[in-house]
Image (cartoon, rainbow, N blue to C red):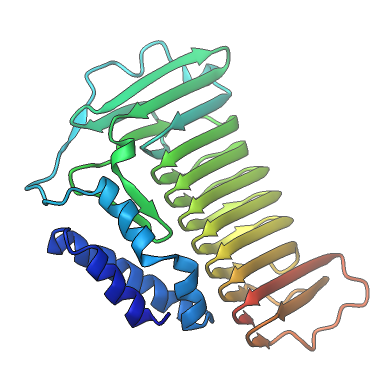
Length: 329
């Protein structure tokens, strides 16, 4: 099936939606197909990976309002003292679970915490268990939202709840699980990061840690200006973007999406693989003790370091894609 055939069939299946919502959906799918083709996938393969237009439309129609409602709900701050009885100096771990929750945690001089819920549709609890700060969240809007491989296609009347934390101390463990919602982390120092967003992106910046694990099933994962010993990024459907990151061991994988590594650490172990998508790597400096391997089953390889030979390599960096191009600079 071609792109035009796919979009025409999807448009027909969504004819009962308002024109605004319908056009938003069509534009998202068209952009995704174009990006997949730019990353080296054939038009037919990218379209086939999306699935049957009728099935897609059925899922969207099951949760989208047929008539578009006027206006949007505003965030409403929950009227409770969330900071009561919490001493950051006594906390060694933070554990967060939410089903329709956007999470932002950033470093700051003073501990602050705020929970917002559109229309007060979220149920939120928190408490201290020993040296662990625990958050649990449920939202009545969680099942009213459609997600797909393009990220969010959301009814404008439904917005995720949001948890914002300003954290002044170091941590041993930070664990985050959100079913629907994005995660943003900035300026934190934590030994172990364990972050998963099933449907939503993950953005990390100015982070220092030992072990970093950041995963999104459907969404982009971005890490910038950060340092680890062991770093793992993965997504089933979405892009991986890395810039100015130092780590001895780096693992990047996506089933459908591009991998972009800028100012890569010259000497480190890197394993990067995508089934469908391109890989672009720009080294900060020329590696000195690293063996570099770049391969693709279907696509082109441009490796400006292909003549670089290391007799006794201390590290190995392997960049592979099943369908797409590989570029090493």
